[in-house]
Length: 376
Ligand SMILES: *Cc1c(COP(=O)(O)O)cnc(C)c1O
Image 1 (spheres, protein in one colour):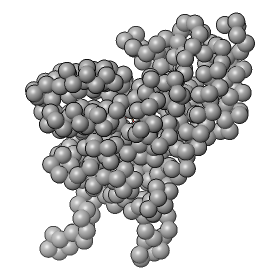
Image 2 (cartoon, rainbow, N blue to C red):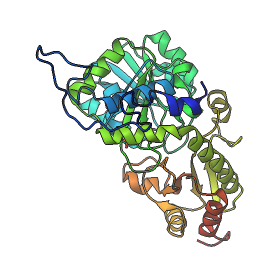
Image 3 (cartoon, rainbow, N blue to C red):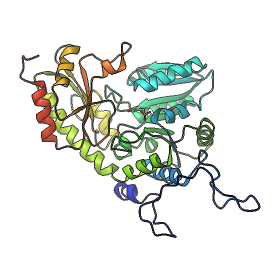
Image 4 (cartoon, rainbow, N blue to C red):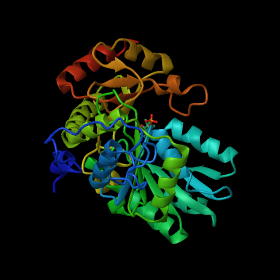
């Protein structure tokens, strides 16, 4: 099936008893047993599993092309579960440009005895040199946050397999509409469902999808149940509703970002645009080889210093100044100021999540905010 059809029909059938076309929300925390202690279905207790979450997990597995999926209360809870597959004394490799929350999470794992290397994995020689005999996991985020760096998923999988390590890809920014890591050989895909999956900036969630239902999946099931960072039924329901329009939304976000990246790249007050769809982007060729579109996220550096970027952002009228991404409304953020003094992000960088407004209005807003060349 095409993704558009799958998004609507995956794990979604009219209720056989009532005929409900829209699925119900199962709020129950527990499930009644019969007189002999027998259960009417697979469900026992809502942390372990409930029908609304199971429906979401079924849809996620199908959309990402995996064998099984696990939903979590946030993207970081999902990524946390992946890192929990690594034991103290084993080694995780992660990119040096990475969502700062994932970076902080890895520093937590370091405190508990897991070895962590932040490596320039965009350079495959550097990555190969960083692999150790105890390397258990290579974690990739492509396109990366906030620099939109591109990692060659196939090449990393090749290096990892040769070393007996597994590969997990944070596919939040690309989504399965544009990039299919499991088909490229990755073992796990992680998502912040808070972003494009929910798609309307009104629900927090995360997910891990596994290529195989093997020992890794068994461990994730155990971590999901034992650590208990599970999403509420209503949140599962909202995310699944978001998934139904995911292919359409992501294509529209991508078309808008392509147009805006072109406008910004040609603007005299913009130093550089980081968008993998631009031929000038260093990762363009690799992105073209593993993505069917370049996504709705971009960042750009304003000519000048931190203040110049802040000034441009302050003049925006339509585009909302807020953290997060992937919603219907365009959001912009001065990452350096948000990440704080330890940030490695360039100070004149603004990150833009292109929403579903008409690109003409977004470009007009950016044009008035950037102002004339020469103006601060
Ligand atoms: C937002 C984000 C996360 C974290 O997800 P939460 O739902 O906020 O916990 C992880 N990775 C990427 C790429 C993100 O954009």
